[in-house]
Length: 489
Image (tube, helix red, strand yellow):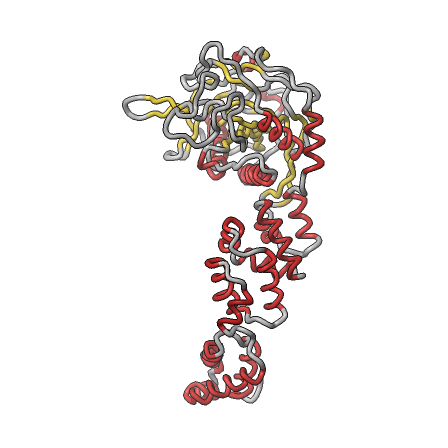
């Protein structure tokens, strides 16, 4: 490598995201999409590609695909159909994949998201429905083929090359995953293979006009990084690929059009590795799938999806910030799932205090998520507890340490816990008596405080809070202690 300084350049990244749809059966047959009793237990002649087997399109897969395209703001095709994409892999039993090439379900969409340093948007080139492939499982001695995944309904989202940093790649993938979960299209668990992404990365390098490039910005060849199964890996792969392409340019001094390459990501080595020169469309020998009809009902399905679509996460997040005054990071947490966001809104309505409820939910997120899943307590229960705390009827510390954990563990109503444990807020006379008793019991601390070390009074405050079992207001206790010991608040 030469010591040539890095030239002026910009990063260009587009994403291909594959998400398994939340359907009961596979895309073109009646095999179960999940479950099974062992390898290759969820297969049939259709997904194994046996001669004479005919595919039948899943209506559920079509509905979910249209729903996703609508949520991404796509233009919905009046007529859409499927094609055969030919290539030879051992885990592709038919020798082709049923996908959409000429007429995807949705095109020309837009996704807005919060990037590393502000709002971003990425254009959606296309959204289409296809079948997943099988899996090749390699070990030192052999390769085993698993076809349970073959034929599962797979949504592919292809963006335009609008991303410029690995931070924006990460943020965009998080936004896509959140949206797919929000609208109920996919569970999108990357660690379970339900969502995979393939960044297409290259650089545009500024070159002088006399260098023979003919352009102020000249691209390096595009590298497609295959089947990344975590968002962190995607960001790291993009960073590595940028550095690799830049180092290659510095070493060779050459730039310009070249063959696209497919590269794999090595998690152990934290680097991309060349797999092959990328096929062009002609290499796949696309032809219309003759056993599936042209679909003409996508526009009607899109109208139904628009009518049923709830407020999308980016819009709801913005409303929480602008209308409710929530901090951006709190609004982010509350819009991670539709279930959590709806739960928050019900709790905030019961409390008539959105900001305190938001703080309670985010501060106790694991308890709240468990409550949503197991129905241990309702949003209304939490809202009313928060309202009682905010109005000074229930001690905040007792609510956090005692009441909420028992609600989550046993489903006990908060009023029952308060009554059983005597957790109503202590009245002024009880607090004053506790302060007097505590001060009288610690003459050494009183003497130390009066000698010029008032910080020791916090020990007395803690003793009073314990004596009242957290039922006193800490600020009030602190004021009373300082007044009694030092003669001033």
